[in-house]
Image (cartoon, rainbow, N blue to C red; front, side, top):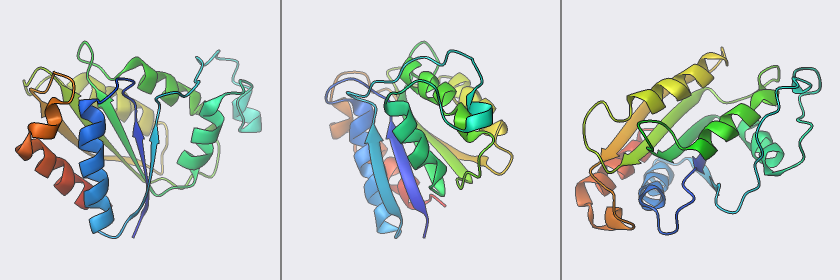
Length: 180
């Protein structure tokens, strides 16, 4: 099966994103995938400075945790980004990481399938659309990759509330099982 990297971008303790991520990972492992999980909690990831040196060197001039994450991203088949939705968009730390993955653009990256799991207090169908569009824009820059799917779990706002949401936990498990 695939080598899968799940990147959780919530910095909140006992986050709903992390609770659903655990179920997603269980589902992916149940399908036989080799899964690694990275949380951005405690990671030092600075902003891209736009120097574009990475386009020649395939390495960022900023020395922080983004370089280690980029190496892992480069060498997996499947990526899953997990984000809380803030103001109808992906978390700022997720966007910062996507910007810092710029050294991968000219590289011989292996990932082909990119997915998103998003969580929000609001439960309207439109809520995750801008976050999905933002990730789609990033994926569009990698011609060998495709945005392969998204799961939105809305109506979950209070810290740890997802642990009591049986339907959403099952959806996250099944989403993990469906990864390619």
